[in-house]
Image 1 (spheres, one colour):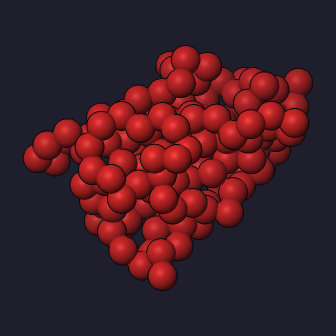
Image 2 (cartoon, one colour):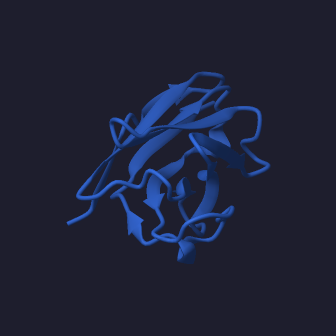
Image 3 (cartoon, rainbow, N blue to C red):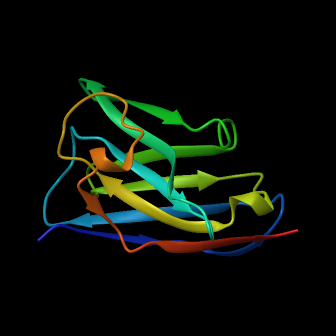
Length: 128
């Protein structure tokens, strides 16, 4: 059974940083896309950052415009984890953050329907 478990959420002041981690068990996603999404109260879940295998040991990171330059996604295939470093946090970053994995290789996947496995979410709250 595949499980994705997020950790690292919490309360932080605006301008601060947090690092989210997602531990995967049950299978490996070495050459498959993984991503972070978030859902703020009263809003739909939205794409935040993704990482896709583009050949050899190279992965590409891609981001929503709202977090580009502030967030960095990374993965450690040896540990079967994916992380999201969040810097210069803003109150509008407040949301539940979800880790997701796809069983479809390749490409830049921005939509929820392209991901087949999800974590339970971790709350990030940024105070002003």
